[in-house]
Amino acid sequence: MHGPNLVSWLLAVLTAASGGYCLSRLRSAPCTPVTAPAVPGPGPGRLHAHEADLAEGLMGFGMAAMAVAGTAVPGEVWAWVYGPPAVLLVLAAARRPDRRAHRLHHAVGALAMTYMALTMTAAPGHAGHHHPAAGSPVLTGALLAYFGGYALWSGSRLLSGPGGTAAVASAGLPRACRLSMGIGMFAMLLTM
Image 1 (cartoon, rainbow, N blue to C red):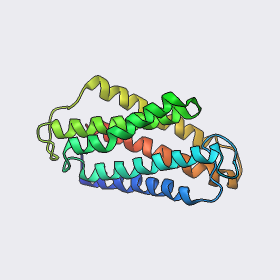
Image 2: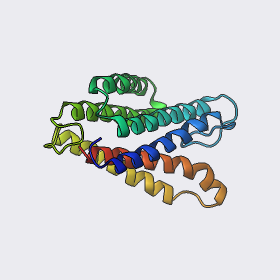
Image 3: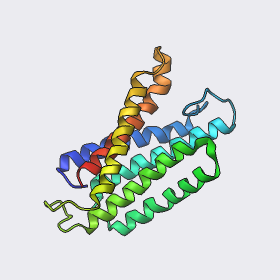
Image 4: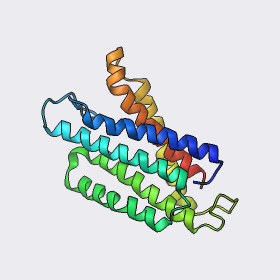
């Protein structure tokens, strides 16, 4: 990621903490789906929540790694890290409509990470020096609009959640993690 080292490290800490929280939810006993009420046992709701937590956890750690070591690793390596999961998520979304929007969101995130990695390593002076804008301005702008809109939507859901401390504790923290990762993705795109 281009930009001051402090910003890169702060972004890495934020996204790693979000990713760690999402992965820690995989071990929680009653795992609740993202948008449905609690489903006891290994039913489809539990599996969807675990899939979401796994995808968000891996994305958080991937964003943290890319924020710190993005240009030190060749873009082709990052493309192999993010490209196959993106393709799998698109195929899963096409095959099963029940979690299509969530899977497509993660696919867009993985493809955006691939795009940023390939763009950063292809740009002249990519080792942190000033350089002209890299990548396609239209694609970068579209991704900025998507993740900016996602952060606003996610933040509004966090603020308009159901009342009560227990409700905020169970639904608010996962939403806050999604919000922080949306903001992190927006910040990474903004530095291109």
